[in-house]
Amino acid sequence: MEFDFQYFLGIFFSGLTRGSIYALIALGYTMVYGIIGLINFAHGEIYMLGAFTALIVAGILGGIGLPWWGILVIAALVAMVWCSAYGYTVEKVAYKPLRGASRLAPLISAIGMSTFLQNYVQLAQTSNSVPFPRLIPRRFSFLQDMGNFMAPGDFIMLVTSLLIMVALALFIRYTKMGKAMRATAQNRKMAMLLGIDADRIISLTFIIGSALAALGGTLIAARTGQVGFAIGFLAGMKAFTAAVLGGIGSIPGAMLGGLVLGLAEGFTAGYFSSDYEDVLAFALLVLILIFRPAGLLGRAAIQKV
Amino acid sequence: MLELRDVCTFYGNIPALHGISLRVNEGEIVTLIGANGAGKTTTLMTICGGIQARSGEILYEGSPIQRLRPNQIVRLGISQVPEGRLIFPELTVQENLDLGAFLRSDKENIRRDMDYIFSLFPILAQRRRQAGGTLSGGEQQMLAISRAIMGRPRLLLLDEPSLGLAPIIIQQIFSIIQKINHDGTTVFLVEQNANQALKIAHRGYVMENGRVVMENSAEALLNDQSVRRAYLGM
Image 1 (tube, rainbow over the protein chains, first blue to last red):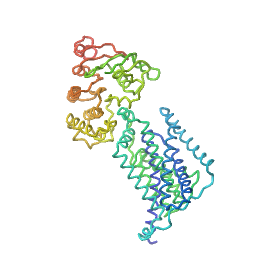
Image 2: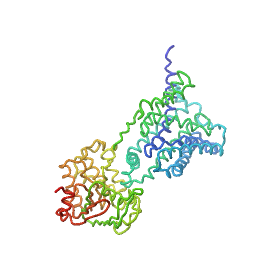
Image 3: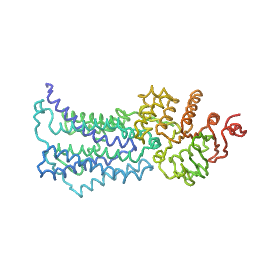
Image 4: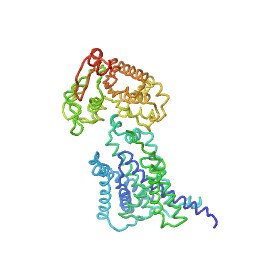
């Protein structure tokens, strides 16, 4: 069989796109883990809420004659703000009271929060899957000129998520708050002794992580045209896998882990069978946990006594 | 400037401080000496809000601070160099120093203080871009002191700055502490190295088992027979 380069490029970019969304969601897991050592299992639900919020906003704006990109941008922004409020509240309600309790307690609280949010959306919205309005045009002429290896939806997803990740990296690296976040992750007690309000940093982490997840939810919904109350589970598990793959707690790790996972799934689906892409993702998770528990960019934890 | 009145602190149900009273006057170096486990670190952590006092009063400039949170206490002008230095290992030297000035926004003065620190510790200027975790113990102690100074404290709390350092580095650190005090910062110094601490301090307190058992001028403590026997090995 001849090697079809066009097909290869298509697979590569769709994998990369998928990976960039995993990375967006994985950032929320990894940042929260870095600061308070919790796997926030309700994070996938925030992603789902983002998709629903965007759906509602897009539905409202659909009738007033805005251009498609205007609707998409406003829907994404509203979803991000609204879900930040959710993330902030979830932390205050479900995790903050358990600070200082054993590590298991907030984990169980997180699972409970996840179930609660799913059921809440199921009751308040619908248990059926809902179509998301088709906002993104079917064709971008410049993409077709470049060889048509990417769908417009994929193109928008990839570019947006890469831009946001660069912005986040710059924020973490150079701003005062970014430095305070890293300091709090490395030693919360010392950060407090410097006047950093750890509670505010924790809230900020949840807010940023939730906004990223909501953006991911909006983009995916706009691309696939489907929203349902249960979509957060699989997306959350995949992103969690990406975070572990990259090294949980490491921000560049989450970005890399997401892209690697997306590419691996993309190639499996493209050259083997899409039935096996989930199997591959979770097999990867098991293998990392066995052979490189610290992840690709994570450092093995050294316990000082 | 700082006054502790009958402060009791507990870890769970275990008492660590049984009614500590002491006072630090503006411009002084006051040292708190005592053996391991006497409650020296607990005293510092109680002052800076890391642990809540169960009873008693901590007055700073005449107003009680024992119910404030650590970040509020830092805002009042009290900085701590904690036991074990607690450098942020993955942040650069520069970033560690930047965070020392976290609560400040006076850019001009921050830059001036940074220059002041690099004149005190030229080695830190050379290592600016290195990760804090790669510094030697002595350099980390210098960085920890510098980071605290970047908060422009009026009162500097130091917890065992000599711990684990070579004698020549200890000399250097203590002379810098003296210089910082000379330049206008009040210093409260917790030390096991009683000899060195009493040499630079104006006054001293001796702690045993969660109680202050002795209080005098540093000179008198250096010459006191029981202190000499218990803490100076003479």
